Length: 162
Image (cartoon, rainbow, N blue to C red; front, side, top):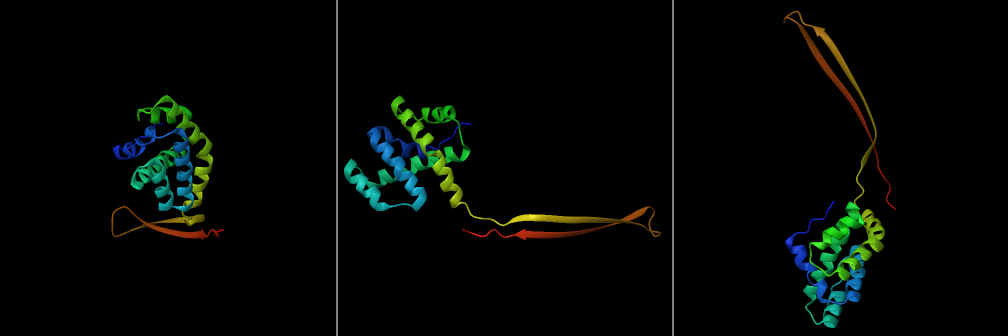
């Protein structure tokens, strides 16, 4: 299964080939921190000063990388599918290999973070039902008349948080 990226995400990731591979690896670390703790504008501003670009450029680069890694991790796409997904971005072979390695190194942690962020929804523990059908002969009509009675008992178990 290939990951389809919108034009906006492609633009956000377009910043990655312009920086060193160590910066891309740092962006990946920031992306994982973004998932854990949320956005941190101070980190973006610091990186922007070092790279001599706007903080929006850094933020969009991190957000694009976050989207790429989270969607790939959610879908648990294979190595080959990940490579094919980033191949269409037109990055160098070295950058594609680096992104693949970052994906492989972080996908377990990203899946764990995403599962912790997922809301706990109530679920049905037991569903007992009984359907009683009574066939009654109606002398007023020609034929039979059926009366359906449905009794349902829903038991909901509430999961305790943490």
